Amino acid sequence: MTDPLHRELLRLAQEAARRAGELLRDGRPADLAVARTKSSPIDVVTEMDIAAEKLITDLISGRRPDDGFLGEEGASAAGTSGVRWVIDPLDGTVNYLYGLPTWAVSIAAEQDGETVAGVVAAPMRGETYQAVRGGGAWATGAWEGERTLACRPAPPLDQALVSTGFNYVTDVRTHQAEVAARVVPLVRDIRRGGSAAIDLCDVACGRLDGYYERGLNPWDYAAGDLIAREAGALTGGRPGEGPSRELAVAGSPGVFEPLQGLLEDFGAWHD
Image 1 (tube, rainbow, N blue to C red):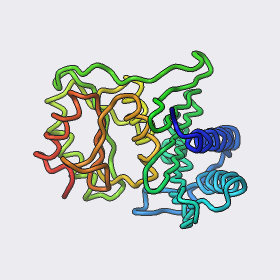
Image 2 (tube, rainbow, N blue to C red):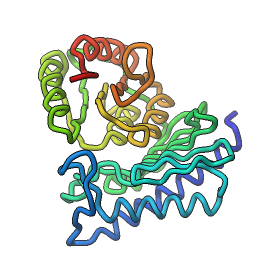
Image 3 (tube, rainbow, N blue to C red):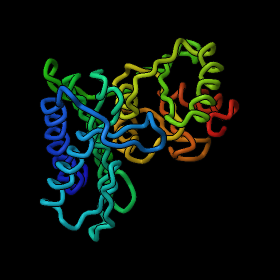
Image 4 (cartoon, rainbow, N blue to C red):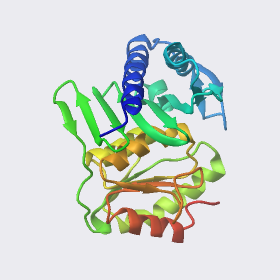
C-alpha cells in the first residue's frame, strides 16, 4: 500500500500539470517569441514557459505553503516540510516554439530527497503519464481511458529502438553526435524526439526499448525517471550511479545494461 501523503502529492501534481498543459495548449500566442536564452543562443525560454511555471508554483504553494521548489525557470525555495517539487513547466520548448507536438509538463514530488510521485502531461498527445513510488505507473488518454504501463520485453540490443537528445552547447552536441554515430550501427535505430520527459515515458509505455542523454537537469528527468522505473524499466547514469548531468540512461531490463556499457565505452559522459 502506498503512503497516503504520496497519493496526495500525486493528485496535486496531476491537477497542476493538467492546468499548465491547458494553458500551454490553449494559450499559445500566434506570435510566440523567445523571452530569453540560457546556455546558448539556441537554448530558449518563451513567455509561456514562465507563465506555466508561475501557474504551477502558485497552485502548489497555495495548497502546501511549506514545501520547497526546484524549477527550470527559476523557482527555488528550500521549504520546511521535507517535500520538494521538481518542475519543468515546458519540456521541449523548441518543439513548442516551432509548433511541433512533442512537448510536456513535468512535475515530480520528492520527500526527503527521494522522488515519490511524478506526472508528465503531453497535451498534444492527449495523454498523461503518472506514477507513485511503489504503486506502479499508468497513463490516461482521451481515447483509451486508463492503462497500466509496462516496458517492452527486451529484444537483443541490435533490435532495440533507442532515443536520445542533444545539448544546445555546440561542443557538447558535436560530441553527442559522434557517440550517436557509433551507437546507431549497433541498435535497430535511433530516434530524437526533443523531450526527455516524453522519451522516458515512452520507455515506460513500451514505445522505446531504451533512451540516453547527456546534460540533463533534475527537472528534465525527475518525473519521467520514476514513471519508467515503476513501469519496470531500469534507470541510471554511469555504471553504479543514478542519472545526472553526466549521463541519464533508461531501458528495459536486458537493454539497459548493454546500452549503458556501450555508452561508458564510448565516453558518452564527457567531451
